[in-house]
Length: 550
Image (cartoon, rainbow, N blue to C red; front, side, top):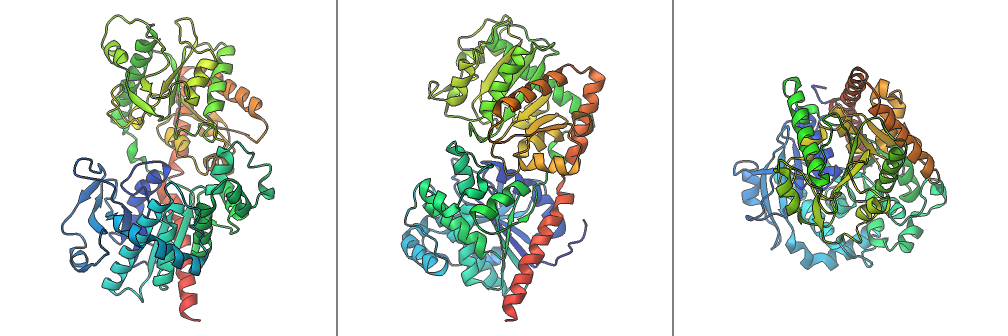
């Protein structure tokens, strides 16, 4: 798509994860940026929180003294609110404004009162990160108004897009102050849906019986839910990332959203000339860590499996993944299996005995050979407890070894010193058996690197595969397993057998599966998926036009 089918004079997108890598929303925005730049060159401005300092600068932000300098010179904000302008150091290099928002706390109560009067947002029960999110998004709203006023954009096509409940107050402020700006609100996961799952309640079989407001009171989520629901209803266009989350939004937020699936960019994947070298290096690192922990030589042909993501034990299916490894052990696979759990937890430091062992020629088994980093709470960590509870000791005789990597893989963890993508390319398979997964970037990232994956029907990505591809490793490189509220053991068995099948393929068969996985990923490129956002832009501008002609 070389030419934008919808004309925009300016597009703002606000998120807590702009230049601030926390989770999947960062991946959404940072990979979408290149396509938006192609369509709306430097007419896209991302707005994020300035939570950085000189001692701890954002590695993704490059400040500029030239960009928007005329506006910045004349912009006036409350005391304690300031901005820095630059570019996001990702493909496309879009314009970014980082906002320091401390000054907004002084007007918090007055602002909350106004939002109650206008939109019935209940901030009385707020706790945790609610005030911080609202202070940032209120400040972001001030920035958007300031730019629109300075550039005199009242009669222009302007969109203000806000991601997740954390930016809801910004949307409501823009809605009240700038009626000629089209607003879009995207929920990547509803507060209540995530909380229902996180509290061990069944979501899917009982979804039609849940009332969002009632569950918010029961789960002590009234303020976040109230804000999210108000933003969803006030927005000119309300969107979410998958059909499965659209049903959740319709039930819990009482508005049906437009579905805008998440795309990906292949520029993360090494080209043909570097791919095999990168894979070989990754495997050597992974197997060296495994050998150094266990004190036993791991076969170069070992089958390497991984899961990754946030440390949401039930929602991300970490319980199911570990139980599947135990079942795979019972199946006695024909190859050595090394299984990694790459999920950040309350990590203390890299294991110093492991650091020494990595460079030792003769390996000796370390104490507790399942952990790469020391934990602050080893006896309370659910993943660590489950690994030991299932009897994984990683002895030389064990045909399935499980290794827990409880840290962010950002290149300086002290053990691997490689990023997650640098290591992902060395895997033979991945498993993401999520119970609650509105989209699911991890399986999409996996197939982009040519690594076949197992996921479930409860992920947006899994649903997309079922709607667009044949659900077999040979056809798509993906196996989507039907998961519900009450078939845990059945899913465990299917995952184990899927992995045993992959491990038993010969090199030619496995290469075919890997290539099909990579082909599947190309069909989820932003160049295809951006059309759904174009629909959202058109819908928002149509609503502005209706307001202007009343």
